[in-house]
Length: 418
Image (cartoon, rainbow, N blue to C red):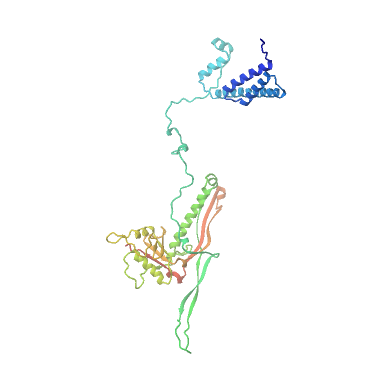
């Protein structure tokens, strides 16, 4: 019986195949299964005596790849041990014992004979009694501050709530490029046309041509801010611009309502309006609905066509809840279903109207001339440069007027309260 003799190469390959198989199981198959398959096929080829140059090259490649991957595995293991030791925290006593053991100073005599002084770098440890983790374990920075880990910060600035300006949207607005708005009005007409007989003299008529004007006025405000604040506080410039715009336009709206027109003030619409007076021949006025309907008639009697009724929101609400003596809601036939239109005229409610007052008018006759639309400028004022300050200025320039021949287009009154 013949004994099969294995060549040294075949024995090495078989041993290599066994080792690689064991590594594959232990190390998560870092070695490729295809590599292992190639080696096994090479071993089979050697057994069958069919080994050619290509097979030999494949065996060499597999050997080289195994050696490289084996070295990488050793490096991975060493690195893992190093990381573990790097984060290992030991007590001072344990560190002392480890040092003695490493230096073979296992007895007092050996330590004394060495003549060495032992200096140990011991990781700092903080002793703290264990406790349940709660929100109180999160420390905030600063007095009365809230830890950012416990808060969901909402970006932006919550602004003070203000009413919305509205009068610029109602008037007849147009631009102007001079300091004064000027116009001519017809006044003092004399004579009147009449029917005449053939060959008779005709009547003469005339009128005066009167020039009038209204000065453009300015409404403005400014804010001083440091360069550091503009750089460090995100969104501050936008908030400053918004604040200037809101406050300047609200002041403009207030003045458009009731400013007296003496420089530097513009003249408000109520300074031009005609006082409410019940038209001659109108029926009994019993409540606020009747009063507003009479004011509409007064504007029409003055030969204008009203297009807005301005009221305070509370007064509009009182119209809606107006009841008769038996508690039934009063809904006049000239009021719309939603209560926002009265005799075909829209009701505009705004807090800029004084409570208890109303204004009915043809707002196409109210001229608002804009010399400079609201704008914002930045610059240096006084000692701003040396203080690293910046002045941000917001302003608007405009004129407001109703021609004398058009004042009858506006009727201002006070609600009777019933």
